[in-house]
Length: 172
Image 1 (cartoon, one colour):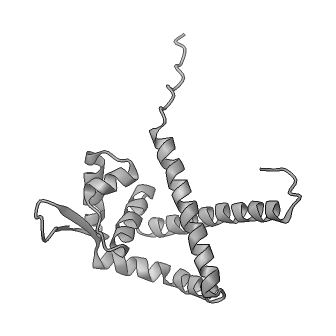
Image 2 (tube, rainbow, N blue to C red):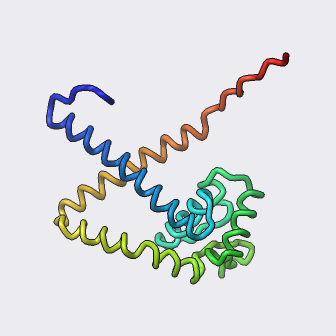
């Protein structure tokens, strides 16, 4: 981590790693600002992102899949969905082909709030990407997809690892 970087590759790897870390922290700050403006907590925000990502892929998320992604119990997911639905951020719909299945979607009000808040960031992102050619964007896309997959694998391994017992306090 804090060692000499002798080659250009070592310097680039260190700079990219630092940029990824800073980007992650800055993105969290932006997300928390949105959450704070709308009375959301971190789990609410993660749920909204999961709902949005699923919709963008054309595969709306179910409450069960949301619970798996967020590592929450079914009772916690139900309370989360109820809270987000009451606040107008998401809506529940029955699957047209299997009425037993519930799908979660961004509600119009929630989507409008998100659009209003994040549109300036979207414009900035578009401006940055306009400075790169298609071939460069292909490389960046491949890199980001691989880094994201690696991070999710690590997240899943951390979640699956046994948790140590908390230290016991001595009575006395």
